[in-house]
Amino acid sequence: MLLGSIQVCRERVSRLEMDDICVALRKHKVRLLALRECRTDDDDFQKLMTSVSCCRSILHLNLNLGVVNSRERSKVVRDCLVKNRSLNAFFVHGSPLGEAGARSILKGVALHPNITSLDIGDCQLTDKSITLIADLLPPNGAKRGLKELTLTANNDISPEGWTQLFIAISASSCLRTLNIDYNNIGDYGVGCLAVAMASNHTLKSVDMEGCGITEFGGKVLLNLIRSYPVSVKQLILTENNISSATTEEINSRLQGLREHIPSSERSMQDTSEDRSSNCSSCISVIPLDEDASHKTKSPRSLNIVIREPMLTSKTGRASNMMVIPEQHKSRTRPDMDQLSESDDTEFTEDFESVNTDRQNRNKTFYTQVTH
Figure (cartoon, one colour):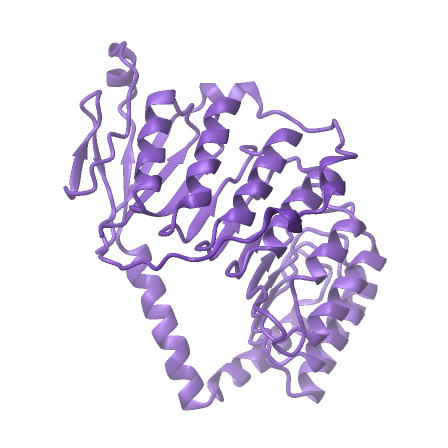
């Protein structure tokens, strides 16, 4: 079985292109699908999510920057996540979900058995969303939970909401990376997070860039690192009101902690980094020839034929597909009755559509080749 990667950015995905993508998904030939800041018809989006729901090969789904821009799409994504069994990572960063849309999608994530990486940053979350996110951080390995969580720029979350999240993190048995940059954390939130970091033994990296932290909060973090055997090895504190002396001492002590990582743990980290670098090194970025695209009147298509390393679109543009052999096992799908009927009610109408001026930007088509 040959697996492919499809990445499209700032494009209107035509019906023919969507048909090609759906065929590849239904044949279990796609491992990564990214439609960042793309525009699609609602019917095509429904068809895409239906194909994702039954695909056994897909591991990574990226719908960042306004793809999920209505209450109907939130419910479609939720239903997709409930049925799919293979996803490991789900990104919906920069989508105007609001409270109701976020609740729907987070319910779908909670019912998925394998998602460990979630990016729901800049999605207009509130304190009510934090309650559902806390449920994705189970204590004592009770069930599979998130390893990577991104909540960037959700400024409607109050200090009480952040406190609730940090309590969950203190007991979490699996979270390794936390990105909460550009939020209203402040010194009070840093104090609560410091207590969580002192008791958590899995958290390795925390991004708190631009979180309104003062020198007092910086001193709290420094005292934490001085006095307690924390597992955190990286703290990002730029764009805060913390003195350079405090920041440098925090970084110096964290560097000392990284240098004293046990050899067995370092070996595991090196292996993980090697895999990550191998994956990123094979990315091929192909710029769109705008002149050629304006000359042709026929709709372009991905024409996904995974058998060949170099593919040709229906408009003559070359594209690359990732090919990886892998075997798949069928898995049992969950009962749809597990969904709460309350998710279908009280949806807000404040969804924002993608800005129309984006269609005037330079278009770029991304594809990835992985060996």
